[in-house]
Amino acid sequence: MVFSSLEFLFIFLPTCFLLVNVFNKNNKLLNIVLLILSLYFYFLGENIYLYVLFLTTIINYFCANWIVSYSHPKIMINICIILNLGILIYFKYAGFVLSFLDVRDPKIHLPLGISFFVFQAMSYTIDVYRKDIKPSKSFHEFLMYISFFPQLVAGPIVRYIDINNEIRKKNYDVIGGIEKFILGLSKKVLIADQVAFYADFSFGISTTSLNSSLAWLGILSYSLQIYFDFSGYSDMAIGLGRIFGFKFLENFNYPYIATSIQDFWRRWHISLSTWFRDYLYIPLGGNRISTHRTYINQFAVFFLCGLWHGAAWNFVIWGVFHGMLLTFEKFFGLNHFFEKNRFFGHSYSLLMIMIGWVFFRSDNLKKSFEYIYRLFSFSFKPVEVSVLFLFLLVVSILVSSGLPYNLFSRLPNKIKSLTLVVLFFFCSAVLTIQGQSPFIYFRF
Image (cartoon, rainbow, N blue to C red; front, side, top):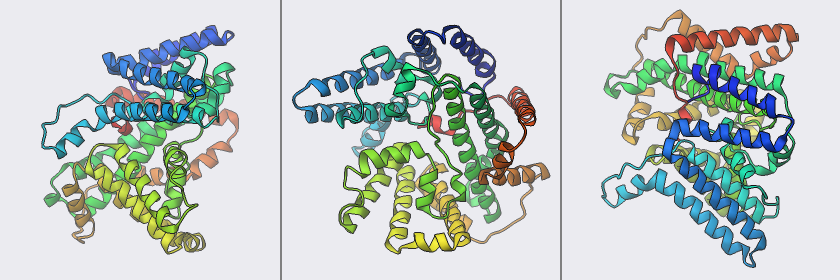
């Protein structure tokens, strides 16, 4: 079940509203209700693989409590990290690792959201080890924190330190949450799912049949699709969190207005980039040591960031590509230049980001390089594009700049409410006609 489905919008979500309103005066009971709803939500998608979520929760809950009572906490945190990574490696990377040994892929099932909830659980245990937080005394509350359905499957990665107070006392923002949810739903249904046509078509055909015009239209469409798909999910998750009393941090900040690749990573998938910064880059020494080591640390982070997204070389190359660009910018001190020449920095950043998305979207490395060749082969030919699709592209680009939202936020409340009702109506109509489509990040 996905957020952008009629089943979720008109059955599951109203049921959640009803139960929260019934139990909202008893916080402990409400946490149990939210836990049951979350486990049911995950069970609908994963059935028996719900045990992976339980296993991860059990490991981190008891390891965190043992860390504060054990005389050698460093040994315990290392064991916990190994166990967490072991779960992730087995389910996500076993086939990738075995391919190096020329062993047949065992076709191990990849549980939904495993990359997200394992990283979230690890952040909790590491923060306990660092004494940034105290371990939870309630197993069911900790399980609710890990399994809470709004952010379970595709993030954002929520740190315990950010919401532990709200686990005990909810901070409701129902109106703001509904607004955030509907705007996120609109991003997914009215933009991402619609611009996906040319992205799927251009990456689906043989590269020998691909001309430069179609290649550029395809990668532009995919750049918009993945942004509105993923940021749409994050907005819906954040909105649901607010409705149920939790304030999740923002996960996107208009990344396509970035003036450098460094700026892009301050704006794109913020919870993941922050996770890698706090739990990998800084512990490795960050930029506090030699310049040479700083580059190595940065490269390691983006190699692993690419691998986090999937057990395939195209994801690794995508991560390495971004790591190389960041090293390039830092080595030549380009960030100061880009800040003074924003148009040039913005154009450069968008070009590099779109080239990077080719690796991310393609089925394999060979096709990635062939696609990039077609982008710059200057084999431009007319492409039949409807006026409606061109209009959608223009609207998508404007929305990605943040300008429409700034205008929307200044509208009178009555007009904002009417706009949200109209958007929700159109989303429902599109879902009725076209059906639901999975979120891109569900496969990570």
